Image 1 (cartoon, rainbow, N blue to C red):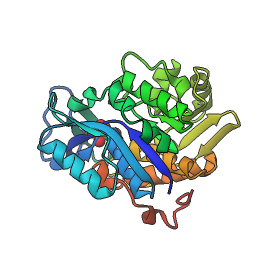
Image 2: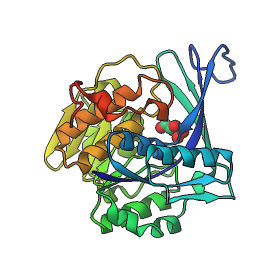
Image 3: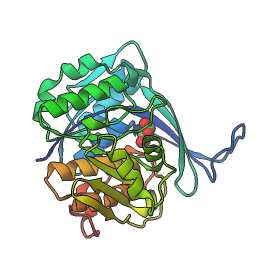
Image 4: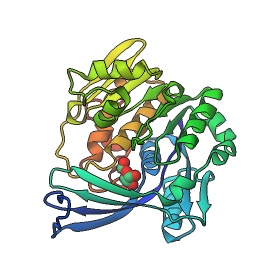
Length: 306
Ligand code: RIB
């Protein structure tokens, strides 16, 4: 079984589906509410597990009913939670999400306990890094924590994936610790200093990010698919066309699928196609974790087997 270690956030998501996104100061009514578990780290853990990996999560939750629900749900998925720490100093992370009729979202996050995941919590889990084939870090936890996680992963010879989301105002100065950096268009623009990439400009943007130290850059371009740039050249993979209901968590699904495929030693081109299919399927249902597909759902889809 591929072994994937995720370092990141765990949230509860309150999602209202509306006909359109509100403008500043505007109230838009007649929405429907979905309360479900989210957080980039926990979403990635759930997705990787449903794709067949053995998964452990390093995260921090509050000592509150939401935190207990989050832990129980992770355990019910079969995810290792020994490294999910509980703090009484902050509430479990919470996200308020609005989704429009085309599946586009706006997300406001109160990170709470996620910001309490410290460097010491990484150092305490050395054995998990030694266990992992692939380690994935996102940035809803402190930057120093993510950096340490990538350092420890490197020391143990694991493949490292840095999902630079959400992109911090201070920027990210440890791309050289990542075997794969996986920005979306907005994050890629921040990392490269170049305008948001269209498909034609994507290779230039990816090269600029590689020049900052990342071994591979995997640029996700929404409906235009994904581009990977690395020492062996560029690889492109088309997106699977779907009718998007809710794109929340699609990036997390992509990162999880990439991690699973790399842990399975799949070639990069197949891994990209696989990740695109998983991300597309995650857009076809409401919510983040509820929409993560199981591996059996991929059967018969082009790219569904990495
Ligand atoms: O990537 C989607 C996630 O971002 C949501 O689940 C929300 O919790 C925020 O962390």
